[in-house]
Amino acid sequence: MSAALPRSYLFVPGNRPERFDKARAAGAHAVIFDLEDAVQPDRKADARAAVLAAADAARPAWVRINGSQTPWFADDIAALSCILGVAGILLPKAETGDQVMAVLEHAHPALAIVPMIETARGFGNLRELCDARHVSRIAFGTLDFQIDLGIDGDAEELDFFRSQIVAASRLADIAPPVDGVSTHIMEEDVIEAESRRARRFGFGAKLCIHPAQIGAVHRAYSWSDAELAWAQRVLAAVDKSMGAAVAVDGKMVDLPVMLKAKRIASTA
Image (cartoon, rainbow, N blue to C red):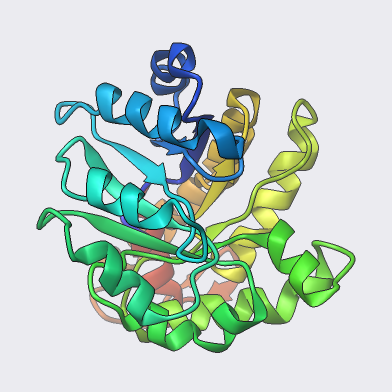
């Protein structure tokens, strides 16, 4: 994962403009102005106007628009996808490449799109969504996904789906996917454990619903001191060996081990 890729995405309700600057200063790698779940139906237009007013090309943010199944979708994409202050669009309940293409009709050239897999149909069309133009990575909307499929649990119950999302992302040569939100707010150890588990599956970032979650997510998606030290030992041993076989910490260093060490060192 490139060091430039966000590891944390923080939601802020689009109808709460007094929170926008606080969200930007909270330390997340990316801020998402939310027009979907966080905004009541009768406040959608006001929220869109507030996000437009706050759009700043010097501090581009993301926007989660309303889904294509809603009456607000067309107005959202027409107003927001062309604004340079909008770095990317989070597309909820994404199910087809045509939905992505609809967002691109008004988009500025640098706009990134992150489809959210939240339904069985979206999962079934995963490869199509990964291959769509301007899609930079996939987000896994775990809470809505569980509801759609009647799944009760966010651990091993979703292992298969997480693995498939990671594999499809790699096959499409896009960034590692973004894991869904944690319902725990202040329990940093729980949030970090959840994040580390998703990272072991190959995820590269996590959605956050509260600034208190950011630190735990960053720790989970950063290399530990022990991992960095190991990578440095491996690379030093390889460099010193002049191409000969070498062992580090009692284990042979083959090409995959060396590549892993290089990845850790380059993204620390």
